[in-house]
Length: 256
Ligand code: PEP
Image 1 (cartoon, protein in one colour):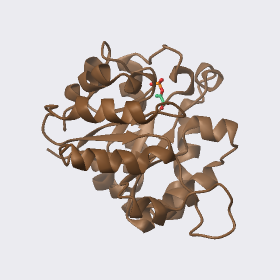
Image 2: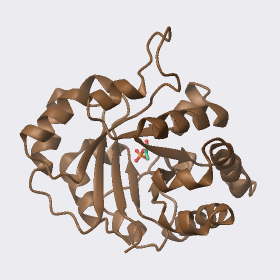
Image 3: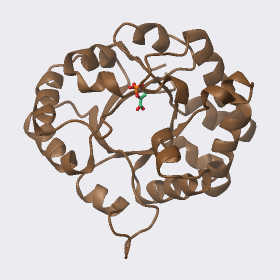
Image 4: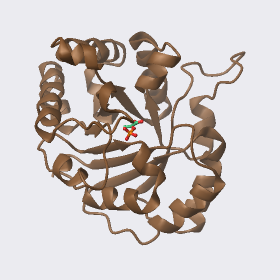
């Protein structure tokens, strides 16, 4: 087995203390397949509570906590921002970087995303780097160009060898929160492109990077998606707010 599978929950700006409790009790006796990690990413105010509750509830060590964003700066006058060290102090282990909502609503550029991935790696946290094309880009056959333009600045900044510690989430923007999922064939083809793109820089690293699919994954379509050879789990938005549905999705993931 060369690659672990990851199922990451992106709660976005949803959820509350009650969901933290429900999720922890629902995941208490989950049976995960070999080589699978589950990462729950709530809004920042709930990170600490989730870590504490997960420990108190004796959740499997395979279930970890992630943040949805982080500053590229170490510390200083950046009102409203959260640093990698702060996340580390809370025992957070993953950080979602470059989600399409951050790229579009908060104008995060691929250069800034690269700085953030660098900061996250330097601190010893694991970045979940999100990339994906818009509907218009897919329709005009620019998908591969867009994905390459999102990946290359990160490769240039951190170096391909560091991708051994990076998780990539391919999330077609048109499939996020819309109910429109990429077909498993389309998702596989795009994941294969991403892996080949990384392989041009380093084949060994490319073979080991977990590539997650995100975009309207639910209990009814996760198995088919996760069965694809280059899909190593998922980044789950809406369905991750429903503990029982999320549990089904986690149980379907399998290391490859
Ligand atoms: C996401 O926000 O990363 C996502 C994939 O959302 P959804 O599952 O709701 O499409």
